[in-house]
Image (cartoon, rainbow, N blue to C red; front, side):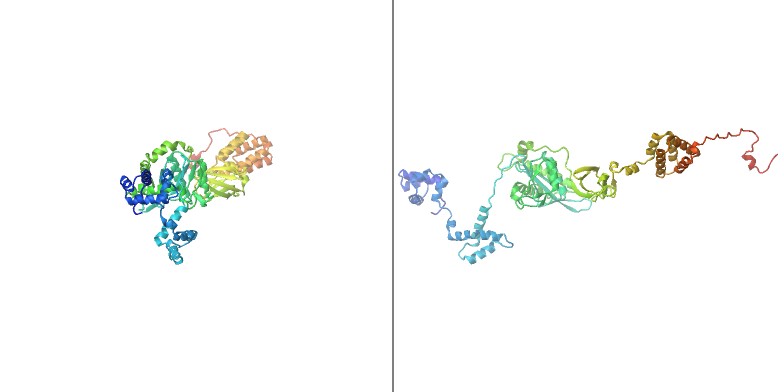
Length: 520
């Protein structure tokens, strides 16, 4: 039958009129179709295995299949031969350099009466679609955040050098509301990636239950279809924000189809609209991106009575988990050995950090961030330091040193004066005179150590007398006091000092000896 097939509703009208005894001409006039069309459909009813009433009771699509057999191509012998070789075709297409045209040429050599090139490609494409159908994924509000980097870059101009600096564009979206976020970063390395992800969560005002990144090296160490190894820094980030990471399968972009679609939309709604603008730093570029993304989220969606922002605010934002009180700091891990000076060497900063001296020679684990350094030995935290970027410097906690080293660092005039004050007043006076000398304090520390040691071994009364004698004779050396005590000079009675002669007039002064002439 030539022409377009009639709708099933009209065919049922035709059958009902025929059942009522109407003639072919009358039916044709009533339905506005030709007599030959009426004859053809009545002939098909005669050949049908079912009666008219049964046909009238069928649903339109079921009854339509009985009148319109469809495309006969799939009943052709050529199709049966083609179908038998489909597994071979799919296997060969996966090999390097094999194309559909090459397969078609080999197919025609083997089966000269087969399909032409266009029909061969058509049927092969239909089978590809049939074997790999798409699934509609249902997403819950606040459950997932899809993460990716756009394939194309944006750039800004360095105002000092004139250099064009290319930037990666981080893209994320919540699949339930399709609310999106974009931000330019310098690279895809782990620090830039986690910085952009942290800014995204701050912009959303909460944390979803699951983060779904692509298999990028910043987040995933080894790509796997079943159990990809999540980068340790990404795990630390997820633990800090109390969420989990479930990476998309390798080479399966449909796992996060919405963010892939967001990238396409951002090309037209951000990239294209910024193409004629020039930026001179990363902040100004991100400010422009943020403005365009805001317009994108406020644009009414096709076939929906709302925009992405309205959907996000009304249905999803309140379901996100609360943000932690402190921002995330990227953690670095090192295994270090405690040196003989009870310090570990952090090679990244070329700086030394102290560890308690009992751990000398042991292996320690250092976890450091931008601001802090934490050191662990045998699973216990043994040291915490503020991170210091001074090359070749030492950060030392005195409590980590042995007693001898602590004493060495504690030495000062004040330290020795406090020690002497607790022993005796005479020793305190003597040490005051020792430090009053015009000598560097460190030259006098050994003298003070010797005097304190001598005080512990000597009778207190004898030692105090020796100190008074040293003060009297203005000899403050350690050996002088040792000689006094060794010779038992403190046992001798004190000698009375001779009284000075009384004054009288018969004295010659300096003038007498300086005059050139003697006058009598």
